[in-house]
Length: 164
Image 1 (cartoon, one colour):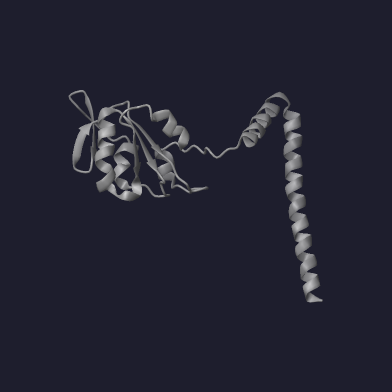
Image 2: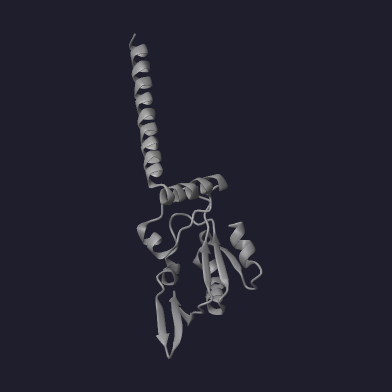
């Protein structure tokens, strides 16, 4: 979220809005951003999005005399291709509907540097040494299987102790 703010704050007309305030509050500033091609950020988005913004997400454009228009609510106005729309959430693991996932691009910025390093290393090893990657996957599978067996053994032991 801070990265987006730092990236776009130099742009005059950048708006930070909140979907939870209701369409009456955010609709006019959003319309101005669309009309003038300015970036807009919606903060603290829940798992449900306001249906008022569906025409933007679905890119329901109307072409009249070579001018790209969009209709939101009762208003029909010009759409500027420079317009950018961002959503951020404070939810650690949001579960968006397939419709929302299809209309948007979800990026998880919570990856740590160490986690990213591990992911890149796994990709590199998979490309350079597929045999080692296969061995690593087998070891991961064995470790998870052993953890499951250990948990089952602990549960069995605790059950036996409680029955005695």
